[in-house]
Length: 96
Image (cartoon, rainbow, N blue to C red; front, top):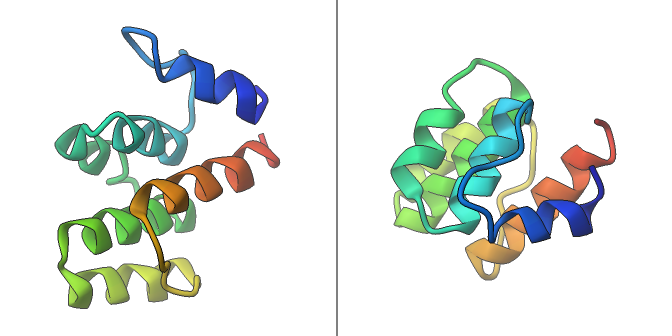
């Protein structure tokens, strides 16, 4: 899936089948579905931890976000949360 295809899928009723958990989390986050995004990124891997961190940054829980950025071995995001979710999705799609 390309980033453009991923972006177009955000207008659909449901995410594309077979998305890895971290991309599914990004998909829901970009649609404003915070709880669904958070539920999607519960698997214990670095990609999910990265999305998890961004979610907690968006909600304003900086301490929790900092923990998840450390788990993901990522630099904390800055700027709009939407931009971070898009950047994460592009990075993850490059490996799928």
